[in-house]
Image (cartoon, rainbow, N blue to C red; front, top):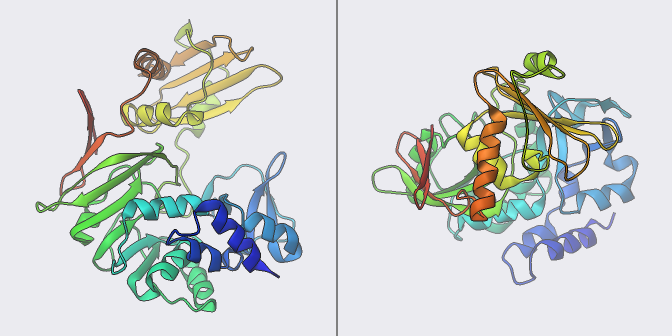
Length: 377
């Protein structure tokens, strides 16, 4: 297989030839790290087996796209040929190369930096090893299988970084100049600050948002930085084989129920996950909301569900029609969404992107921009 031609094309799609990331992208065999993955079919996830269709393998793997490699506890590596999966949530993936490079660029990695990264398939680790040398890279994941297989695949291409199985929200196996996490966290773990060397930088995303946080360690053991203007989304940290779905029971109860409050929205129907800035503000103000969508024909419905029992359902027929909204539980979630949209309509923007970041040594994170502020614990 002429994978080098495909890798050079990918590199040219992601960066300019003079970029320090061009050679790593052009010389790293991504197909080694993603031999099998889960692709979206018409109704369900379907196993894609690279070696069974080499042409499609090269086309898909050397595209600037994310490839899902684990659904719930089901690794693509372990799935039977022809396997399908109707509804599990992705729990691991090979992130699109352009976003991996974006995260590394935000880290401002120097030639002598020692860097901790999250493992996944190991492809992002390989890019960093090609850029710095494997001896300067530590790669960690909570999943022992991922660490083992990624280590074997890295070794097969001559790269031998430090690897470890660990929960990234807990103690880390060393000290580093940079920490780059391609899993998202609700707040920055205090262990990251302890593991950062003086002046070191961390880069991560906040769970449930599209927000990239960059912050540099300060003398008091905390960190200061900002929310970058780019949007990005990664899977949340997890502590078991799968994510919990705490609103499943609520969903069954309220899917078609009448609300305690019924109203008509002044805005067209919005699925919050389609609007990064709106979704990010919602997560900061009312963390933990889950979203679902459905409908037939021209009718569309969006559900907002929270573990505390709060819920909202909005249904509209035409694309620009105002939806009918049913709400129940202790909080009115659609009202929170409406206030955010009022602000966006009034000011033309939301304050999350470009906000200043302050993290205290215990990991409490505060965002502020102008008169707006919020604390994330």
